[in-house]
Image (cartoon, helix red, strand yellow):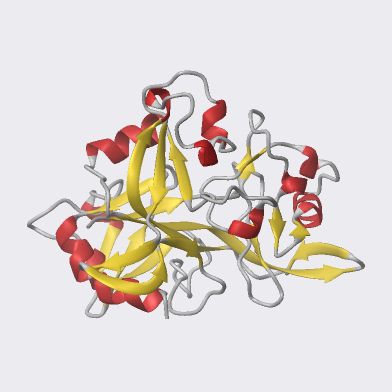
Length: 282
């Protein structure tokens, strides 16, 4: 099994601001804008409530929620009403990011951990705003374990009808356009777990924050030693320059890449990271 740290959701370049940490501690990853998508922000829900007000208030654009939203990965059943009965977690990828996943031999059984930029919010005078003085942090907010990998261009017209709402079905022909379909249940080290094969984490507990707690820059990460570069396999992809790493006795610091979506960890390092992965679900 390989672990992929996958950057998804709002940030300064896509959406213009972080995703919110709600006052009750819940994480709401905001999908990036997509002019080709049939899904608008106002259509996306959190426990029956449209995310429109959060999006409009936090971006400072009153009509932002009328734009198309790239709901991808799609991990919450309640994000859209009237789901197909066969719906389950799904991720789309294409272009350079998909080519990178292919070059890193990402395959069925591998595990995506999705992270994004988050910042706490509060309501003031009936409007949502980011809490002043609290910095944005990179936070792990969801997961998807791969059950199958599907080339969109190769799909028969009547195949996988439950996926047809997904924004990657709106793309022009592209040999890299790919769907990753989730397992129904999560397996770690060949052993079944009580967890679904996809989903979201509800809060910041269990060490889900990647950003160093003492640094203001969200891309300064603190990671367990299992992520440290190893002599027997390449380091975390996009981070193979040794100058990015500082190795301590109990953990390692990483200056995370500002660009790139998919950071792939080798099989041996992933195996050593299993106790850390298991703690994320506790």
